[in-house]
Image (cartoon, rainbow, N blue to C red; front, side, top):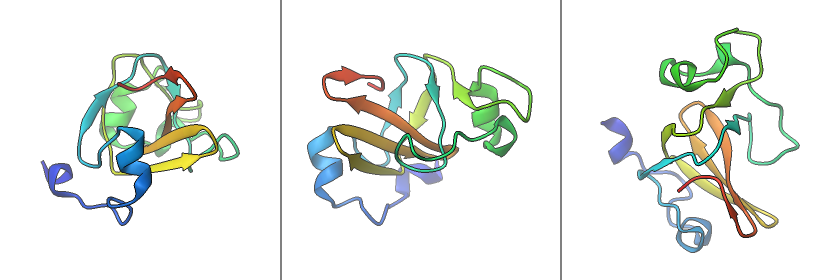
Amino acid sequence: TWLANYKSPNSGSSASSSSGYRVGSTYTLKKAMKVRSGAGTGYAQKRVNQLTAGGKRAATSTKGSAGAVFKAGTRVTVQQVKTVGSAVWIKVPSGWICAKTGSKVYVA
């Protein structure tokens, strides 16, 4: 797929190497996770109608105006990795999701 060859502007940053998440790699959500417009809880939760076609299929709701939440078990491909405080956020085609906070891992 085209994502396998995608190079993030931050692909060489310490965040992607120290976090354990690699740009271009695919991971699985261990629990349902909100999809946000940016890396951090201060960013708005996206609506289902703002997701990619694959994101819409992975969403817990099919209502376009509902807050976007990916189902546990959803497979996501990392486009960018960003550390915000003690949290690691990953950008996927539909938006940003929290991968882990402290010792809690949500995406593996």
